[in-house]
Image (cartoon, rainbow, N blue to C red; front, side, top):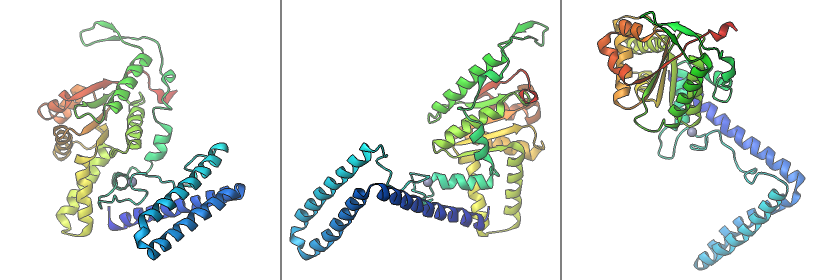
Length: 340
Ligand SMILES: [Zn+2]
């Protein structure tokens, strides 16, 4: 992430604000056109405001009385306006500025000077190569989740000791997973929400449910990083390489913040754990991130095609067992839906 990217994002905010203004002007024109009386009311309100400033300057002693009188007049006019709106089924805030983010009013920063979460999330989106996430989340979310695509027949599996065990149907299993995910989202603000570990082969809906959770929490204003283990490692390597080779430029300060976001963001979703190059660097990095987040009560969701035994073998019993102990393990099984 470099300064240019930040500048581009800020430029987007600027044009968003201009767009908001432009749309408001259009709504005004439309309303004034259909209801000239509203235009007249707005003109009267403007007149009162102008007169108020003048009168206060002329008679500073009567300030309070003048202000009160103007307030009453303005309220009277506003009520009249609201009445016309209601009678014609126009939303009462129709002639107010609309924002993408109501918290910072599309300014990217809060009054305190701190970055608004929407701005932080945009930076995360750039840094963590999540550019197409919005499109994906439009398609895959709780409202498009369809239980009926999962087969409903009960199958019999053979366990390691050759016992025949009946498992829930894939649909039944998904129903229970779906409700666990809903609970996870609803309890997200609670500090004791356990992490989730999705296991099962590809095509069983793991990514879809990660998307559902990501969308829901992004919509609620949480900072979410969602990336494959492979790309996270790539970004980490890049960050460490730069830090060791280029000292003290502005871009490094920005990278530093992005690096810390891996530890600090509200939710980290590590997709496809096990597809990254597994060596001592990647093992210890992944463990370090997940473990640090666990200690800080930050939520993490891990999704993997590996089973628990493989995970422990790959990453080391000692390092990951504590993490796994803290996870709610959710097992996906059944038919690969992508083949349908
Ligand atoms: Zn904002």
